[in-house]
Amino acid sequence: EVQLVQSGAEVKKPGESLNISCKGSGYRFTSYWIAWVRQMPGKGLEWMGAIYPYDSDIRYSPSFQGQVTLSVDKSISTAFLQWSSLKTSDTAMYYCARLGGRWPNAFDIWGQGTMATVSS
Amino acid sequence: EIVLTQSPGTLSLSPGERATLSCRASQSVSSRSLAWYQQKPGQAPRLLIYGASSRAAGSPDRFSGSGSGTDFTLTISRLEPEDFAVYYCQQYHDSITFGGGTKVEIK
Image (cartoon, rainbow over the protein chains, first blue to last red):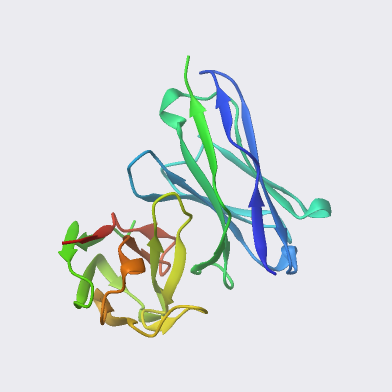
């Protein structure tokens, strides 16, 4: 079964760092882009960026460039979304998703989501 | 950046009725590069339609997509109870952007 499994919910304070993960299985991980999507409470979907595990090619949404860092560890088929200094406005559900083909493409497989809560 | 505007914001219908959802792009989008997703409360989104009109694996045939250029439509021919959800369009013609969503609620 093709699936993406994300790390668990996080509670952090402003200024702290955060690293959430997304592990792919059931397919060749290096052959498909992984995207990240933010959903703030009660709001819609926002594409943040995407990474191609084969060569770590990265595309960022202009809205998120410089705010987060995408990375990947091919050896464990896992993509990461990182913040160096969180803000309360980073409180949201974060989804990873697989692109169904070469860049850019629709998202055919989604992770279950990781809720990040940032509060003092 | 291509901006997608979905309308209406909320659609109130009864089971068995037909639902028509609109997605308008700020500039022309290839019909190969428009997708629709369904999201139910507490769940991750699910791909329904890609390439404007191709159903994703597992999508029931009551869901259909159409359109070209700047105007695209998702039609649900007869609403089932499990279809009440939020629907998002997405373009992947020029980078990636999502529309704001349409909520289909029970009337």
